[in-house]
Image (tube, rainbow over all chains, first blue to last red; front, side, top):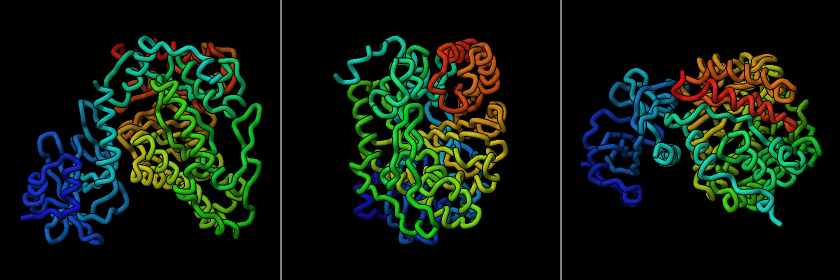
Length: 145
Length: 373
């Protein structure tokens, strides 16, 4: 079973996530995760209710950080040309720096993502989820109200 | 007497409430009223209010108040902006002077030899704090927060990432180095770009997020090939926005490709960072307005697009011509997948004729009212 580092516990609490959800993302992901050889970290994600919850964990299964976004991931809109340094563990394909459509409150917009065109899967990195995507969700809530 | 005492308050419950709802339309698909019109009004707002171009730039708080005030007259955007094309350069040592008929201009380059580039370093966030540009924007947005809070959108400008580099060494040197000593040109550009990123970081500390405005002005097809535009502009713009996002700025981005982007427009789609809230504006294809149909076809799956009516028409005594060009752009762009705004091909000229602005909004009402096409 996955564990959570002390620093990650603080982050999880601050971001309003549940530890059991984050543990569940890691324990349930199997090969459905991405790996970065340089940082030796994995990222796995899972839709839980209205959130997509991400866990970033090391090779020992210890969660280093976790984050989420409310915007729902749709299709890849630009596959991207540059290698991101990440590999999809399910099929060993390299991930590109591309763009993916997201939908929220009835509108579909795109954002910069890690894309794996063969499977059609996309991931959003932490800096983007807690920054631009969170701000965008706030603007959607405000403007769609 | 403060500048705020010179202006009546906007009609907040009527005009502004409606304009604010309309402004959100292209970004969140909550369609209201009609297509929005943004002629990038700057010193023209000051002129309409009886002030001068110099007043607009020399007194930023007055300038931004004229934008907020006059937008109501032409039913334009409910938000304010004030800018010129050389932010952060004074922090790097460039001296600017105010002119009667122009935005502030540089008094001259700070280096002239390639060897001098090595002496330049980006200015850190700590050193930018309290400096020329930081003070200017904090005073400006502080004024807006206090006096025009309904219009506040803090903006961090990188603006023209190639052009600003050129200001430090002289345009001729910069263009020459891009061909003969590209590493030097890149290093010079990098000094400005990293300084601007630190500036965006600084502003986002205060405002939580800051809209980014970044463009490709000097880097266009009148001067550079597509490959050079990609190298010295599109890829650099990517770096700027990516780094600003990582430091907390965004998610709104206004991409302004000024001048002639006849073929180089093709290098931007794959290189730029497309956020959930961005607008792409391209001024010209050759000597004509950039066709809205091409803008839509190429970019509608990643961004809100902004169509152009030639700024030359905004000072010709023929409002019907503006109306017809606006109609053409509206019909081509109004159903773009991620939204469309009607604009002019750059900042509307300082002496824009009021009748031309009315022609834009009239066209938007006639051909851009949601639910009528």
